[in-house]
Image 1 (tube, rainbow, N blue to C red):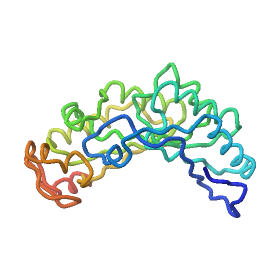
Image 2 (image 1 turned 45 degrees about the vertical axis):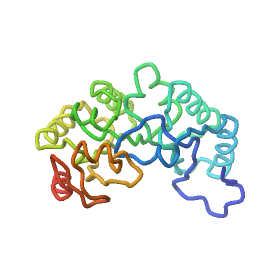
Image 3 (image 1 turned 90 degrees about the horizontal axis):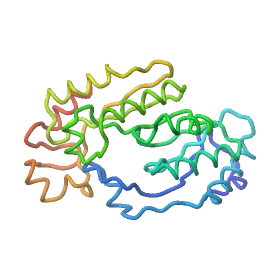
Length: 237
């Protein structure tokens, strides 16, 4: 980890990494191909780095940014990470996680840990699209997690991928309906929509899926059986 006691100038947003890898296999994502095995730092190692950070920032408004692919891998890890923040006295942090990992049973600990900003990859509000993406989340659990975070004063930044194979005007409207149906507003939550990018390391670059969905092209120039990259860009506006 970074030896923060040797760093001259501490940034206002301080990056740390408590794990590498993600157990989920979303078809648009290349993380699990680049890092197929999950590595978890020990709790003692995480605490040691956080203690170094705390000594440097004191009571300033700096925020710790946990840059893990998915910081809340399971309930045990939620408890370990949150308790590490609580023990070290850092009360301002943000990170990437799944909305479905948050529930009424663990939100108290999450809030106590000082989580301020939750970066949530929702990707779609359409059940069929989530299944095709291999997202392995269901919409009621996603909605519940977002609303619990927001109701506890934790800002949610939701991201969506537009144009995954199967995307149509109907699925786009289902995503819009999902957003409009969220009971949020107590915190400054927001969303961002991004057109699909086909990474050469994702499932969408594999012959199996390219033939299945008639995918042509890579990167930000592509087309498939239900949409093309220009239409996906328009859907984001």
